[in-house]
Image (tube, rainbow over all chains, first blue to last red; front, side):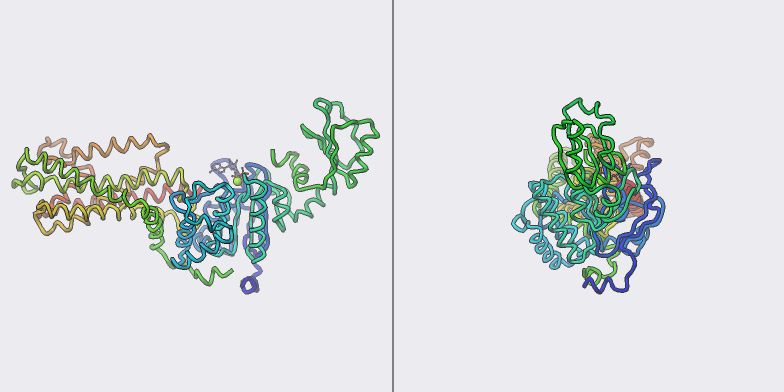
Length: 316
Length: 266
Ligand SMILES: Nc1ncnc2c1ncn2[C@@H]1O[C@H](COP(=O)(O)OP(=O)(O)OP(=O)(O)O)[C@@H](O)[C@H]1O
Ligand SMILES: [Mg+2]
């Protein structure tokens, strides 16, 4: 069915121009522009307070737009909120599961909010519990579930209305690596089925894994846009050499690393040398008589892009 | 995906609030004892005060001045009071928990439901519970011979109206509460209402100045309305009570609507 919907519908699923959100005098989202096409996975990458959640809430039609244009599914959230929300799935940053209901009831009542018949809501609830591997906990209360299970249940709940567009605000924050990979796998399968994903994260590996395209947000603004690969190519070198020096030694480094790399970034705990040939840089460092505690060559990531763009690290 | 074809356009309109009632039914299906217990409150009052105290007091002047047994006098007032208490309980503690802690409404608002549906749904739920209690109380009143008129069946819708008025205003007050201790304020209001709204003695017991004050408060209207119906003394005053309570309820819903909008849709 996805084919039928996408043909003859060139409109982006989400279209924002000069989108602005203010809380009193404070500007949380400052005139940002972006488009999300049907079928893609689109990410907002940014540190705490960048304005990611504020943007997601506006797209989800639960937060009025202060200024600018926003169209979701071709409709205006200000006037068509209920109609838009009927076709959205939302995974909020903080789980908002119904603690007074069981796992299955959480899904069934959510289906009822979307006007599904009781039988259909129950049928979908069980199918989704199977999908997120919670069927054996169907009759359990929500409270004792682990963080990862709650997150999976929240995702299942967001799918009860078979949404065209799924909004995920930090879907894996606070989960252990195994639970994260399980969730990524589920999200990847949804994308394969044609669901459009819009997600926020401050994990660069998550953005690289899941997003076809992303924008980097910082201080209420979009500072860069592209695919993970494009961003890395555009803003940083292929490889990075990470040097750690014994405590206190970094102060004497002034000037001694010059010319070894395209760019040198000095962080409190380490020094980053951006170069297309990391191994050669390691040799060069030693030739200059420097004796780092450790020297690690790795591929550049979105983390480096972010550092380059904002002068700050993404995850503290 | 197929959602558009299956869900169709959005025709549900005002019925959307009913989904929230359905949610509450789901919750209370497991804890139905809590619901049943609400029925006993007015019953205990009736037995303790109506009969225990009634035996000592004997007859008191009824709504039309003619003497009636104390049990007949006090039963309708107890029904009105319990309609108030039940509505307040549901629309304050329970709503506060869902609003501030459980974030129940945040999740609801990500669906086609809006704040108006939340406001109406919760008030409707408080009303439904109150109606069940009123029905139970009606049966007891009739069985104990405390009803003096067939109009007593109208005490059920009357109790619903009292419940509606207090649920709406209680929920409106709740949207302004910040912490649990703020709820002490509710007892500061409801206890005097319970004691002084011509509940236990006729309003003629008050000096004129005080009478004006009592007539201005809401429970008095509920008590006098239900007492008029169960004793069969009806007049234009009852219509005044209905209007007072209806306006109070509608104003409460309007405030809830606006406050939830401000609190939840930032
Ligand atoms: N309701 C509100 N009232 C006032 N300020 C708010 C409100 N919601 C968010 N803000 C402010 O707007 C800014 C952006 O917040 P937002 O939640 O959108 O950031 P974020 O990118 O999602 O951050 P995080 O990664 O921590 O979730 C923050 O400075 C925050 O304090
Ligand atoms: Mg956020």
